Length: 135
Image (cartoon, rainbow, N blue to C red; front, side, top):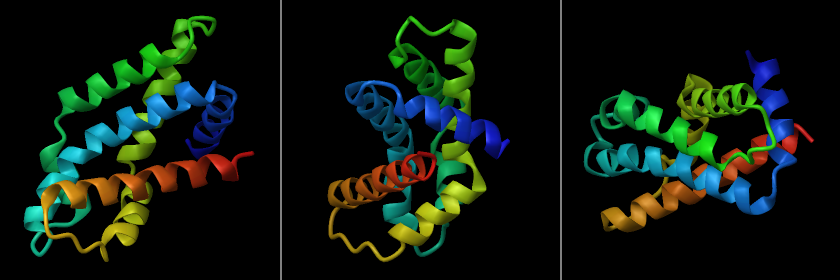
């Protein structure tokens, strides 16, 4: 599985920077629901639990469709769909969530919007670091 994800990350890095940014923002947008929930319940819930409870299957499907729509039409639709599914699967994976959780556990914010913004920045950094490892 990870081999195919790395293959898709290699493919991802070949996309225009503007497209990469849109895709990353779509992925972060889904996780923002979990960040909002976690802000109010971080003493009682983990990021994994917050993600499982706050991001519905329909939201993940919508994210997959959005990612798919951002990939240029020069790529075959089957490859676009595989790519979108792989990225969403990666973001939902225990390894990704665990690493992200470690990064955001120390974030202290007095309001929800600041907390979500700081968590989103950490998410973006993690995704970019993972892409850089595949180069």
